[in-house]
Length: 162
Image (tube, rainbow, N blue to C red; front, side, top):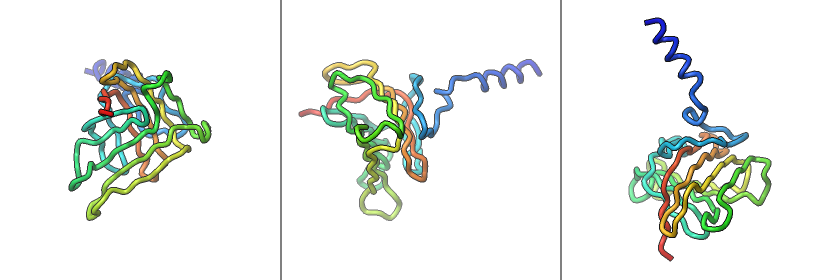
């Protein structure tokens, strides 16, 4: 019995950081596990509803809604259809980092709030596989809001019709 406890403890300690990923504003994870995208956006657990992209932005929307609006949504202004297939951003990356809009809902509000980031966040975005209709993406993003919003994992985004 003691051996099983020690083995379980060792496994928990040695699991890769990608399994235990959370908010890290200093540097995004370079190795992102192939697990469903999850995290926390402005204090609410995030469960992926849909992800779409075009030649301007990647939009990741939560499954749950508050009234008419999605409970949370990230819009990352990066053209994943271009030649660049990987972004590694830190707070020191400068003003050329992709802009991010974070939308979130609050109880008793008629419309979502929006926070916009032009830097001071960390993100690793990797396009694993892309076709004309969809893209498999791995993402770890940590935003500098006081609720320490972050998303990490893998998902498939569908191209928005032009």
